[in-house]
Length: 239
Image (cartoon, rainbow, N blue to C red):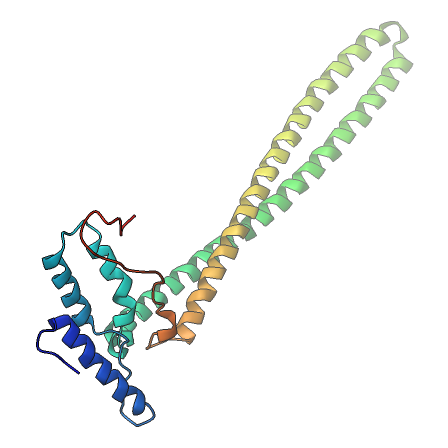
């Protein structure tokens, strides 16, 4: 029963209860649209009436948020066609961007692998050259020992010093190349990580495009849980 001394929010609430009753009774009939659990106008009016009767301690706006999930209707759950179109276009642009970035990173890694292989070949060449230098040193020492026994020690020392200087140069080259290879391998691994991340993002976008939704499942709209109490200031309802 509706009484004339009831507030506007109470009247709206009771009217909405009647609507909910008929909505539930006719839910299997064609063309019946599901109603929200609460009338948004009722919630707004209720808080307007509370503000007129009680001092707002700053929590009223937060309390309104508590009820909002219960006022969502089917119309609000339908996604706008223009927004869907714009969102799809943005996803396609992002998809193209990620695909291009993945291609660039993959090409970079292919070049890195090629450079690493070339550097390894250079190391092999340097090692071969060092071996030839050492063999030449042994031959030169043997010739010197055979031909000039009296100056052998001096010439042996000179030949060994020459070989040592050249060998150190070759050794430094190998160290530098190995350092470059380590850096290239680090860059390769970093690119592989980026490729994996980009592919995961790309797969997410492709899945979204393949499963484009035009309606938000109302099960995803969860009401808050708790108690809302109000009354005169000083009663510690907000504590």
